Image 1 (spheres, rainbow, N blue to C red):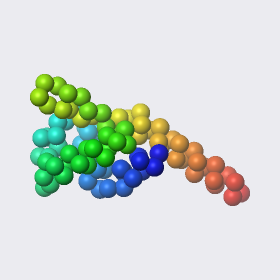
Image 2: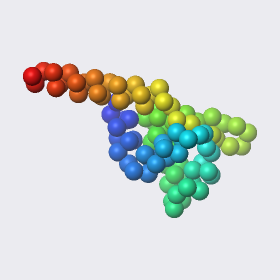
Image 3: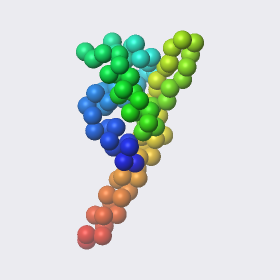
Image 4: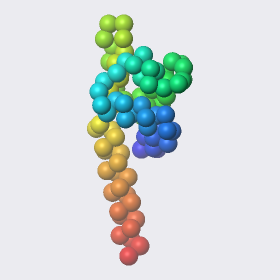
Length: 91
């Protein structure tokens, strides 16, 4: 869960996830949405992939990225479950 929240702590990565929430995209399409270089976007995608927040799939010469909703939703549920347990113990 730490990797997930570290990945989510960066604004650019949050914006990439928002784009992928709309639809799958290749790296060129993602780069086109930012004033950042392709290597910088690729680094951000690597962090997101390492946290299992995105899935990459090779399609011919392109790699298409999509949002891994399962990891994102599971991490949020675990976090809020822990938060709720802490609140309950304070009562």
